[in-house]
Amino acid sequence: MKSATEIALAVRRGQTTARAETEAALARIAALNPGLNAFTAVTADRALRQAAAVDARGDKGPLAGVPFAVKNLFDVAGLPTLAGSKINRDAAPALRDATLIARLEAAGAVLVGALNMGEYAYDFTGENAHDGASRNPHDPARMSGGSSGGSGTAAVGMVPLTLGSDTNGSIRVPASLCGLFGLKPTYGRLSRAGTFPFVASLDHLGPLARHAGDLALAYDAMTGPDAGDAGLADRAAPPVLPDLARGIGGLRIARAGGYFAAMQGPEARAALDIVAGALGAGAVVIDGVAEARAAAYLITMAEGAALHLDRLRARAADFDPEVRDRLLAGAMIPAAWVAKAQAWRRVFRDRMLAAFSTCDVILAPTTPCVAPLAGQKTLDLDGQVLPLRPNLGIFTQPISFVGFPVVAVPVWLQGAALPIGVQVITAPWREDLALRVAHHLEIAGVCAARTGGGVTI
Amino acid sequence: MTDAEAESVIDAMALFLALPVEPKYRPGIAAHLQAARRIAGPLLAVDLGDHAEPAPVYTP
Image (cartoon, rainbow over all chains, first blue to last red; front, side, top):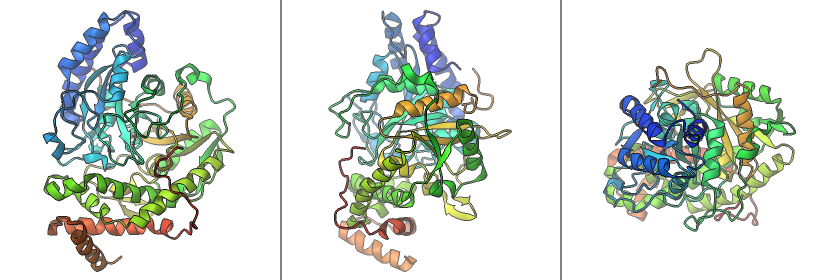
């Protein structure tokens, strides 16, 4: 399967058409989706109309003919915005597309559908009581990761680009379990207008793809001001693509110790050894990470519960039971804990900024383990048996808590049947550096996405 | 937090918030309250003093 970058170049050169690439993506979806359950809606008619419009255009745009799909919490004109729920099926169809969809299509990309996700994004597994689980393309008996589960599943072998959301790790966890590059930008960098929220304090949107360059291509097309998102920063976003291939010369790179060196399986450690070794990384220890993880956990429970309180009262039985019980518990979290959690956000931000005064890039695990089996309930980490659902995000949650940008990069250990990710973290607004490092790792052959077993069309 | 304590919190807060807590929801809610209390431990133990400003509108 071609990368987004290759498709756009070929369409612009007249070597293929947006229509041909769209039809090829629709054929891959028809062949693979029944076994993997990534899509909840395929917008074939709309996609073919958009493809024809792109083919008819003079300047076809930087993403000319690139098929993409979005987590179903993005508004897609004409569809109800499910956010993985049963309840939202009763909502009126969206009147217009989310801002990021509109920007990608303005750049020539072609939306082909909406993707499965954990209900209301409160999930790290990709399981969903209403739509069924999105499956891991490398082993359908295993989890895709979540909550952007379909965004992980689809980007492996169906479309070259997907969009997801990340509140505590929901882009980075599926990127790790499905073996993709995933970008969680700085908090406030990309507009969330026209998407169903989860935790306004922590919600981010971003792309997943099989190549770092495709993340950069999509990211550059999606930045820009938008009055529709109150959390969007008033800050210029220089394009990252021109400097993507500058390499890592001059960058100070460090591997996070302490919290980030414990509570993980051998695959997570080995992947970090490989990436840190390839980058010649030094070491850094950040204090207060467990407190940061706790704070994100509490803010998520409380804000998530507040968002859904009326729905919990009116339609508790219509929630996914796993999500319902967690939200009900969240409604019972003391306000004083949440206020303290918000105060810790500023304290921990300052500690992270201090760490970045001695380095430009920090490496950490993405998930503590490779993709667990579907339905698995516990994790064995360094001898401790822990509940799986909350603990898949122990390494992603502290970083999104303070809104620093991350590219999750995929590693295949020698002989491994499943991939695992490493987080490439940079200072706020330095997506350019994280993407440069990710691209360098890809060019150097250290990190790569693979299509799933037998998945070639 | 013991199971009995979690049950007491559920009883009180369900009443206070008018939440429809069916018997079959209770084990899940109790488990999540206990997990939250355990995970919150390190944060609740911190002495932040009186001047740590919260970040409800956040700019990194």
